[in-house]
Each structure stands twice: as structure tokens, then as C-alpha cells.
Amino acid sequence: MELFDAIHSQRAIRRFSDEPVPDELVRKILDAAIRAPSGGNRQPWSFIVVTDTDVKLELGRFYKESWDQGGLSKMASDADPSTARVYTSAQYLAERMGEAPVLVLACIETGGGDTTITTGSSIYPAVQNLMLAARGLGLGTVLTTIHKGREAEVKALLGIPANLETAALIPMGFPGEGERFGPTRRVPVDKVAHRDRWGGAL
Ligand SMILES: Cc1cc2nc3c(=O)[nH]c(=O)nc-3n(C[C@H](O)[C@H](O)[C@H](O)COP(=O)(O)O)c2cc1C
Image 1 (cartoon, rainbow, N blue to C red):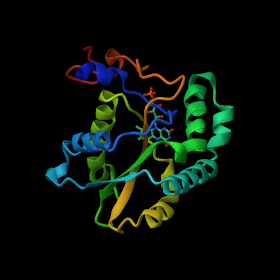
Image 2 (cartoon, rainbow, N blue to C red):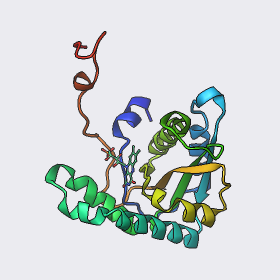
Image 3 (spheres, rainbow, N blue to C red):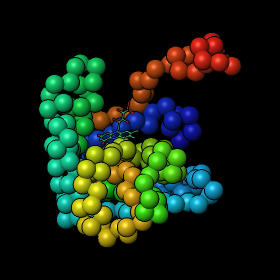
Image 4 (cartoon, rainbow, N blue to C red):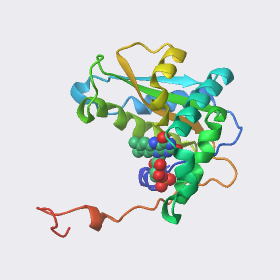
């Protein structure tokens, strides 16, 4: 697939078909993820690929608890029309996270200290590579973070060492019925880019 086609059509896919994802595709996607840049080339990432049904269901349960605890079900039902689509889709996923064919938990080594946007951000180029590579292979993904409300439980379930922080839980699978890749709806470049100084027209 052409790179720009992948970039323009990669979007949040939250409904998956039951079709299994071959292991060689998962490996290829992770091999793309680890090509990403990181601060000092420290490559502080680890990825836990979860395909075991019981473990996925348990992760899904933590995700849903955290979703409910954050009052997101209520926000979903109260959402105005401009955000309702995202919330409806996110609610659908919150109820079925554990049923996705594959769950990838992206973790970052933090040394046990407090994570900042600088120390923690080395995971995101890898996550974006992962999602773009998946798109290139016809697989849908979405970056999610709601599980963070159950960080300790997730780490205990998967035996993740103390010096690692979980960063993103990424369900992966072939798009389910009614799901489609992009085009995405985004604020245009001219509204977010400036030349030479803030407000300078590009
Ligand atoms: C940092 C970050 C955190 C996100 N967390 C969640 C999440 O917890 N659950 C979820 O369903 N989607 C989550 N998303 C997905 C966004 O809602 C989605 O990328 C955005 O609405 C754009 O969707 P689109 O590409 O389909 O237009 C997250 C995205 C980012 C970048």
C-alpha cells in the first residue's frame, strides 16, 4: 500500500471481525513498530501481544471498569452531535475490548520515576508505526488509554516489571461489518500551521 494512502486512511477502528490475525502479520507489524525513533535511541518499549481468550477478557473487564469509573458511559449518552459518533464507537469498544482478536499493550521503561510528556513520549512514534503498518496490512487498530485507571491490576495480571509503565492498549483485527478505514476528518493544515510566527499564513 502506498504510504500516503495508509496515512490518510488510518483511523480508529473499534469493531472487529472474528477472523484471526496470523502471527506472521503481528510480527511484521511489531517489526515496523520497533523501527521508530526514541530519545537517545534507548528503545524503551516493550509490547505484550495478548491472544489468550481468558487474559483478553480480563483486560477487557479492567478497561470497562475504568471506563465506567471515569463516568464515560454517561458522557457517551450526553455527548453533543459533534462528539456523539466518537463516544458511541468508544462505548461499543469499552463493552467488547476483550473480544478483539489481538490486544497489544505497549509499555515504556520509565525507571520507576514520574513520567512526563518528554520521558514518556518515546513510545508514541512506535505506536503510530504499529498502527500504520497494521493499516497497510488491512488490519484495524485504535490507540486507547482508558485501561490506565486500572494500571496496577493490568500490570499484575501480565507480570509487568515495576520500572515499566503501560502506555497504550491497542486492539487489533480485521475491520468488522460496517467499519471502514478513512478518509479521516481533520482540521485543515492552514488552520494549524503558521509560517515564521504564530498567525503567519502558510
Ligand atoms: C492519546 C490518545 C488516547 C486515546 N484514548 C482512547 C481510548 O481510551 N479509547 C478509545 O476508544 N479511543 C481512544 N483514542 C482514539 C481517539 O478517540 C481517536 O484517535 C480520534 O477520535 C480520531 O479518530 P479517527 O482517526 O477515527 O478520526 C485515543 C487516541 C489518542 C491519540
